[in-house]
Length: 329
Image 1 (spheres, one colour):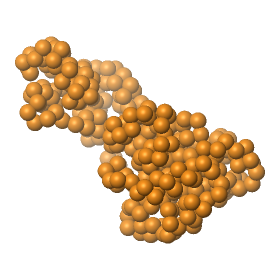
Image 2: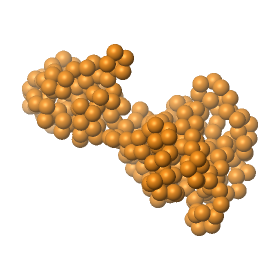
Image 3: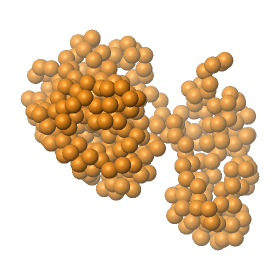
Image 4: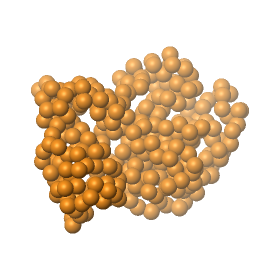
């Protein structure tokens, strides 16, 4: 990207460009866009443009059209370019014309960013190489495998690396937009925007609090099958490496190697993730923290609290209050 002081600061309206395409997630655009629009209410001067490869309107993820104002290649300069995401980006080939359009406009902006899986487009364009980045929690592993030259931060709500920003799943585009407004106009103005939109200025915890920590099972014929099923059936039992190895008829070294190759973690790490997922389900159902600690095999509420803070960035009580069923409570 060009480092252009004339574009960067207080030289008139700040042009915010959203790059969109058919299938784009509507909230990626609308959520972040509303932050900039509301900032204008409090004294900012943002001008929002919606750009596609050919300048035609696009159909969004919910089937309604989204009006486009510009051809991406025609954008001569912008303060900020944000590439929106889509459920399709991690699983399908990305349109080369879209990648080339993003490459071109990236050279004409002060700041570049992505929302949710829009990071796959930035990565395909080579704009994240050697950088730190994030994406939707469901896709962080696939993202890391596809682009090994990127340092993936799976728990972050958004990541800044220089003037390149990437954000996590969908609504985190709002968090990113708030951070960009704060960078431009300071804390007082962005606090007013957050209050107006009834959102947190900075939400507690990372995106892992929304994800399933256990995302894969061992292959059907794997020696780990009996081990993982035993852990899930009785999370509070003795699941030391030695006892798990005995159950699988393996040495402790063989067991650890299998966990690494098939599940991407250690035996102890896997046990803790299972316990956390069971604890989250219990808290979702309205169980007390004390009951949850016993049910999930943590032994004490303090052990449960430490595990939640380490892996989810929030306490069990905060998690329960945030995610339990709203109706009837």
